[in-house]
Image (cartoon, rainbow, N blue to C red):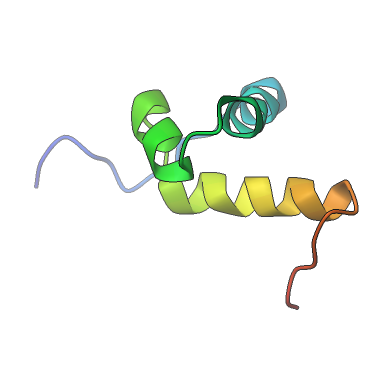
Length: 62
C-alpha cells in the first residue's frame, strides 16, 4: 500500500498562513509551492482562494 496513511495531516495555523503568504509573495504556481512544502495542491489552492475572499479580492462559489 505504500507509506501514506489514511489519516490527514494536521498543520498549524501558522504553517497554513505562511504557505499562503509564500504563494502570494513568490509569484509561483500553487502546485509548485505545494510540491515544495509537501502539501496537497488542492488544499493549498483552497486556502489561497479563501485568503483572497477574506481580503475582499475575490468571490467563492457556495
